[in-house]
Length: 425
Ligand SMILES: [Zn+2]
Image (tube, rainbow, N blue to C red):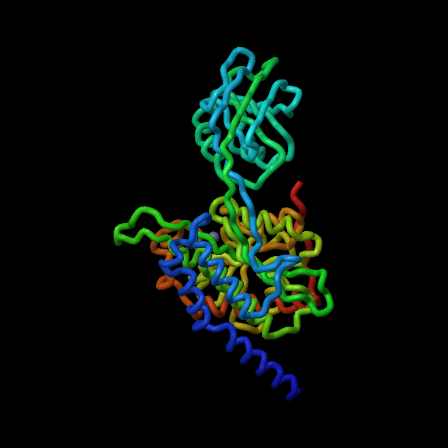
């Protein structure tokens, strides 16, 4: 009885010593400082943030992930800029005006419609729902898009020009009224540039269940520098989005490293490129076997009070696994409570870095306090220059991080295993 009580006391003292408002403030202040320039992908600001996160992981004595020689998980992306597009679809000339290519190839030549799979986007088709999923297709495709979609086609052309994962296949979109052609001749020449990104990943190997992973993640990229607002502020500091989640990941790493009693392997990851398409988490999910990931905690915007006030947060996709119930049970008797996501219409489960692992069946949920209703029940600083540390509640944030640490303990120890999320087909 007494021994148990002492154990409990030292546990709670230990957690307060490591996870507290002063430490949250220290890390937040560095990540959201103006000299990080808004941590935009492909800028020096985000590299500076990555160096800081890696240095903190080293202080927490995390190991490298897999066979990596550093905490950086490098991602090479390719940007293909069309310098020449020429050819014919039957008698219609093809050029930069009516062709868009989702490709990372320097040269493409199509001499027959048989070489590529054919997809037709008709007048009545929903453009966005039909076209954008094709960007992830694993086959060579020619997609004929009815000219009724001309305006959307133009904005899609810009999107197609963004940097992407290097791929062996291409999707070629052609805006045309001829949806049943007999012949094609198409030549595309691209100027290729490599763009590099990196996640920051650290590991605490499990004592007995090394092959069972629990992932704690948050994205460290944000929107960079834009036009000055009314106060002359041009830097999107992203203190809440998502320096807050990144701070949580770093503090949880420090905590579990000090505890040294995790039976499962813990993986801590600061994702890059969430704001431009979730490339960091998409890459990460391919570097490990998702069947070995027992749970993923994605932490996104926890710097403000939730709609229920302090000492509370919500879990996205709550009903998709029983992870939320496990977390709630571990918090029984405490002042803190988790709730199911109160904004289901916002599709938050599919809008953050948990989504790729969840699609692969992992109980991967986002924990957040961000208010997503209409003003005044929203986050007034969301995606604005004013998302700064002064608008955050560090005491509450520390309580949320503590709640994640405490509520995850039976998952970390291997006692509880959340049910799987239904895989996406
Ligand atoms: Zn975010």
